[in-house]
Length: 389
Image 1 (tube, helix red, strand yellow):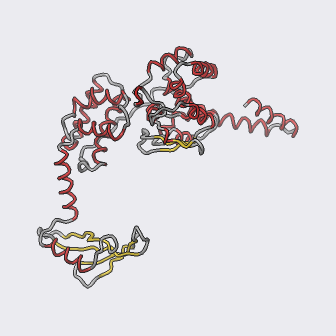
Image 2: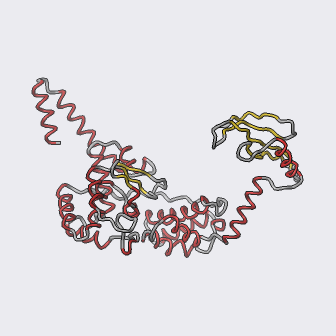
Image 3: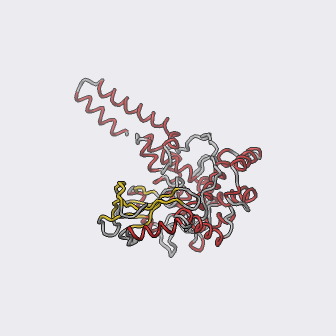
């Protein structure tokens, strides 16, 4: 990092700090100027680097003189460039942001739920408005109207989250300056218990998958059970996202926003190795090699064939089963949260009661061993525990 000590030069209002040339790694001077503009406001800004810009004290002094006479400051120049970009691009309405967002976010069609949420709720409310024309009160009114229409808190949160992502997409790509609107997500109670299959249900599901006619869908469900990945993440999975030799897989655009890598078990690697490869870059492509939008028909058929509970959501339930099984086996919540790519530890708390069960089982084992005075009996107790585990 550059040292922040100001070093004077022979020129008034010109100084430098010592930095590092990014190409050579050698020390270089970073020149700054200080001046008052035509409005009398004092401004300090960078003039350039001795290596990258061939900046010298005399050149910096000339730049300073031009700024004093009225040439725009660096901040003003950047703002003018931004306005020019925005003028060329036209008004960045929410509708236009949606089209741009889809292009950059997805290699195929967006998820059906996301598409419907935009079409039915965000487009009517804000489609022709720019982010700067939307107020925080407008967002709160949308939340209120959705609640009055009987929408569940989870649905409202997904709609508002999509609006926030669209606005942030434009800001991150520098289509405009960050708007003042604050898109605050509503709190969603965890009104559902984690879905968990018992041993018989899991055995029936695995048997049905083995005989299912569509092997792509069967492998999708198998991978969900073995990795805990979300359905949308599985749909977006590409062949170049994985390293089967090292046993790692990259998750594109997870719900948390940042790309993640997760380790693969031998069983998960075997599923991927058995998957038929087509010309599509996607591991589980839909028609024409495009990304799938849903597999609802298959999910219903598999659930009914395996005689699973009607409320069991095949992919979401597989994710819950993956997490629940790990926690019940004694894996700590932090590790489970990392594997599920949870954005915050609070999202993994729903499995905490299962962790308590695993801890209770562990202390009972310890108590049983300690309370057995005979070393031979102690060894037999430990062996019996291993055999029943």
